Image 1 (cartoon, helix red, strand yellow):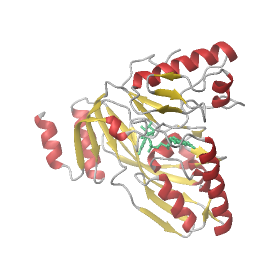
Image 2 (cartoon, helix red, strand yellow):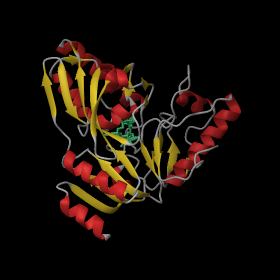
Image 3 (cartoon, helix red, strand yellow):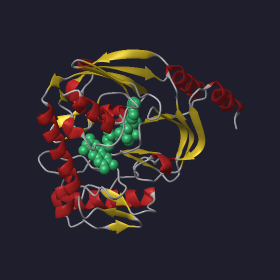
Length: 306
Ligand SMILES: Cc1cc2nc3c(=O)[nH]c(=O)nc-3n(C[C@H](O)[C@H](O)[C@H](O)COP(=O)(O)OP(=O)(O)OC[C@H]3O[C@@H](n4cnc5c(N)ncnc54)[C@H](O)[C@@H]3O)c2cc1C
C-alpha cells in the first residue's frame, strides 16, 4: 500500500477499505473495486481523507448507501466516502429536527411519525440515507425531502465547512443544485404537527402502494429514468413493449418498467445495454429522450448514449 495511504489509515478513527468491490455497497449488487472506501467517524476524519485526496489528485465520490447508483464493473480509481455507518445523530425539538446525513430514510420517517411531525410520511420505503435523499431531492407520492428543509451543513474538498440556507439551494424533481464536490454532513428541518392517525394512514397508504407496484423482491436502484413532463417513464417503456427484456442477468421489470432488476449476476454492462436499448426504442417510437435518474460511476463518457 502507498505509504501516504497507510499514514492516512493510521490517522483515521473510522473504517477504510482498500480495493473494495462496490457490488457489496450498492442496492444493485453491481460494481467493481474502489481504490478506497471510507466510513469517516467524524468531521476530522472526513477532512483528513479529503485533504489527502486533493494533495494526491485522487478523484472523490460521495455515496450514502448506493441505492441510486450504478458502478461500473471496472470500479472507480478514486476514494468513495460514505456517512452511512457513522453520522447517525437525529434530534427532535418540538417541530424542529436535526439529523446527520448517515441516518437512513426509514429511520428518519419513523422518528418524524413518532413525534407527530407531518410531511414526509409518504417517503417511507425510499431506501438510502438522508444525504443521498437531499442530494437527489428524493420524493414519493407528491412529497420531497426538500419541502421541510431549513438549512444544511456541507464540507468541500479542502475540508472547509459551511452552512447553506434552503433558499440558497435549488431543488427540482430528483435534482438539487448541490455541487458534486461538496458532501452534505447534516441538515435541519421544520415540520408542522399532525395527528398520529393521519400520519399513520398516509404512511400505510404509501407502503401498500409501493408493495403493489414495485419489484421489491429483486435488487434494483429504483427508477432508472426520470419521468419526462406529463408521462411516466415506466409507461413509455411499457408501451414500447420492453417489459421483461433481458440482457444477461439484468431485466426490465415486468412489475414496473422503470425498474431494471438484477436477477443475481448482472454486470454493469448488462444494465448499460438495457439503458441504451430503452433510450433508443423510446426515442424511435415516441421521439422522447429519456434522462437518467440513477447516478453512474466509473463509466466512460457516452457509455449510456443510445
Ligand atoms: C427499491 C427502491 C425504491 C426507490 N424508490 C424511490 C422513491 O420512491 N423516490 C426517490 O426519490 N428515490 C427512490 N429510490 C432511489 C434512492 O433510494 C434514492 O435516490 C435515495 O435518496 C438515494 O440515497 P443513497 O443514500 O442510497 O444515495 P446513493 O445512491 O449512495 O447516492 C445518490 C446520489 O447522492 C449523492 N450523495 C449521497 N450521499 C451524499 C452526501 N452525504 N452528500 C452529498 N452527496 C451525497 C451521491 O454522490 C449520488 O450522486 C429507490 C431505490 C430503490 C432501490
